[in-house]
Image 1: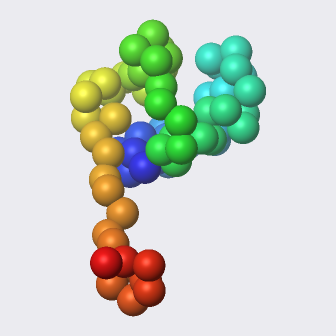
Image 2 (image 1 turned 90 degrees about the vertical axis):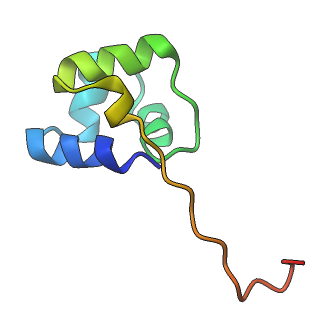
Image 3 (image 1 turned 180 degrees about the vertical axis):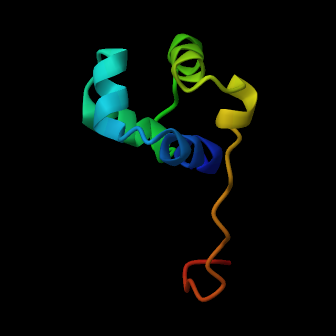
Length: 75
């Protein structure tokens, strides 16, 4: 997940569907990128950074989910 990207979208008042339109891509695909389920190409990352007027590295800092300590499959 990219919390900085989500934060900047909120700050800019841009919804994911509007960003998808600006990028000329499918909303579902963009949602997967924003939520960390799909990798963004360097070109896409650059376009998003330009639209949001932010540093690309900052926008795409990811966080790793914390492990579920109650997960019975965890060794």
